[in-house]
Length: 119
Image (cartoon, rainbow, N blue to C red; front, side, top):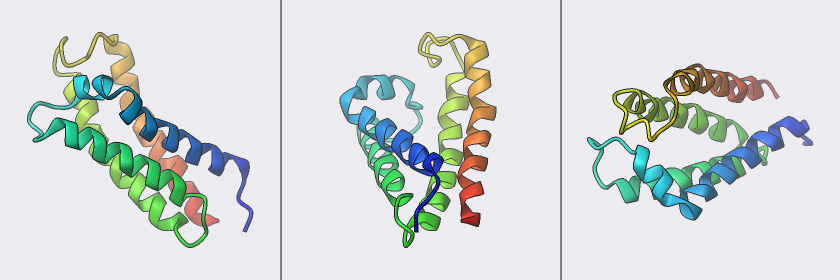
């Protein structure tokens, strides 16, 4: 089955984001909530998850599982977004208004993924 180009765009975005966990791990370590154990492992696991889920979007046999995984992952990532709002240091120098806008963006990304369940 040939999917629309924007599904492949979504896949590329998640694969790229996952690769960035290994190219610039310090960026992700700075925003990792301190209450979560083993931050380096968490950054690596989330990067691997993003890569695998992005790849999973590209194949009919794994697309729907990948969509479910992406939605679940984005729900978990809300922890990071709320943590970043909890203080100046946690916000990693990102303007407060931008941190606030990232929360509805997460829900938009969840809807974007959910939309492909119909294909």
